[in-house]
Each structure stands twice: as C-alpha cells, then as structure tokens.
Length: 371
Image 1 (spheres, rainbow, N blue to C red):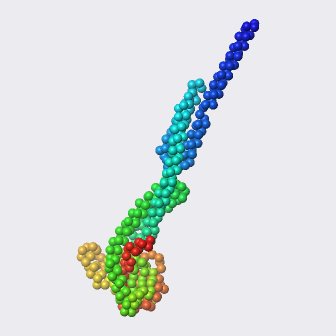
Image 2 (image 1 turned 135 degrees about the horizontal axis):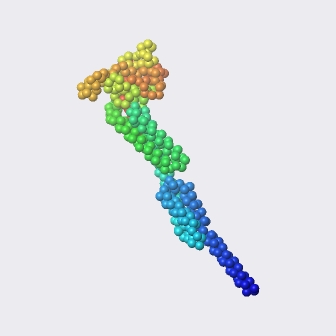
Image 3 (image 1 turned 30 degrees about the vertical axis):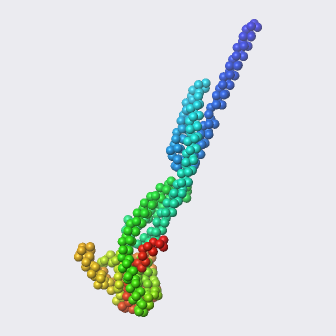
C-alpha cells in the first residue's frame, strides 16, 4: 500500500508541475503578445492622420497604413495558431515599419502644409492685385461679356480659395487659387489688349488736349472731355476752372464710327445750340457739331472699304446734357452730367464754345502706376 501511495503522490506532483509549467509558458507567451506595440503603431498612424498626412503626405501615409494593416493581419493569423506555435516577429517587423513610415508622413505633412500655406498666400496676394487692377482700370470699360464673365467667375473662385485657406484647407485653397488665376489672368490680358489698342491714339489725344489749353489762353472758355477719367473740364486763360463727373456712351471705348454704335466721339467740335425747357428731354443740353468734316470723311472711307456696312448711317445729335448721376455709362454717345453740374456748365458756356473730346489726357503708363 505504501508503494502505491508513493507512486500516486509522485504522479500527482508531476501533473501539478506540468500544469504549472504549461501555465507559466502560456502566461509568458501571453505577456509577449505585441498588444502594446500594436497600440503604439495605431497611435502613431492616428497622429499622422491628424497632422493632415492623408492630404499632404499621401504616399507615406498610405504605406504606413498598409504596414499597419499587414501587422494586424499577421497578428490575427498568429492568434489562430496553437499558442506554443505562435511567432510575432513578423508582426513586430510590420509595427516597426508602421511607426517609422507614419512618423515620416507626419513630418512631411507639417513641412508640406507650411510650404503650401506660404505658396498659397503668395498666389492669393498676387491674384488679388490682378483683381484690383481690373477693378481700377478695366471694370469701367465696356468689355465683352466673355471677358467680364470670366473675371466674375475668377473672383468667385478666389473667394472660395480664401475661405478654404482661412480654414486651414491649404491644398484646396491652392487648387482654387490657381483656377481663379487662369480666369482672372485671361480676362485681364484680353482687357489690356483692348485698352492698349485704343491708347495707340494717345499722341493725338495729347495734341488735342494741348489745343484746348491753347485756345483758352485768349480768355474764351473751352470744354475738354476726358473719356477715360470720365471728366468734363472747362478751361479759361490756360487753366482749368471747372470739372464735372461725366457719363458716356455705353460703348465709349474707341471713336464713334456710325449711328447706333453707342460710342462717344473723339475730336474737336463746337457748341451749335443751347437747349433747355421743352427743347430737350435731358434737363438742359449743349448740342455739338458732330459729325464734323473729319468724321464725315472717315465715315465715307470706311464705307468705301466695306469696313462699315453699306446700310450704315453716320450719327448725329451728340450733346452734353443732364440726367447724369446714374453711376453707369448709358447714353447713345452723348456726355451726361448731373443736373446741377449741367446747370453750372450751361451758365458758363455760349454757342460757338470749342468742345474737345479725347480718350485720355494721361498716358496709359500713368494710369497703371496709380494702382
């Protein structure tokens, strides 16, 4: 009996020791499961995501995400195996790659955000200066709808860019800014071509302006209209004595060529009639001798060369009149003043007074310099 009891005791002890050994191994292996490492990889990846890496370091972030997914897949595979057969080396390798690539993505993201921030701000400032140029010089011009429409779309796209920039969406802001730049630069370039073509007549305008001053030196009053400045001046004794804001024909860029073109003529004219009361529907008016001989000659040549339609007729009834103050260019070719200004001019001017209308008294370079 004693021998059997001893054998049983030894067997029990062996089983207990074996169970303890197995439990110890299992506990040890459980402690070695890379839960903490996986957590670190996930946190590093999340940090890169919060830094904007998905947008600003796409390649590096994508690689980090792939490494993390591989680590999780490998971990799941090992967990399905018998615990004594599990090996987490591959998991740890993917974890290490995840951490390093995520850190790289975060670093690049911060760098790219800073770079994009600076570049976008520079480009927004540059395109805003183009908008200011348009507003200062080109916006008042009677431009084709294709040009003004493109400018308006560009301004709207620029507004979107500024909102995105203010909210830290720098890539989106940069994309919108560059779309705005295409529209705004194109409209500005086309407007510039129109304006420069018109200003090819500046030497003639300059001479006519000098003529106005010279004619006034004898004491007579001379009316001088600057279309670009939208100003009507009165000179006497070689000096400006009055100036009035003026509204012009709807298509005031260029010289008047025929009836219905809604362009204010350019040239040297004189007042042929003063109108008031029932004589005019424009408060008061000063009729000028358009078309003069030079206008008639140019009109005939353009019809002969078929520049103008054979059915075209030369314009007439060009006046300086009241009912201005609309804030736009609206006439069929006349010069419109505020009623009170028209009253002032009407009192100053007599029949026969010279009226000189020019495109601009200032060169284009000076107009651009004021922006």
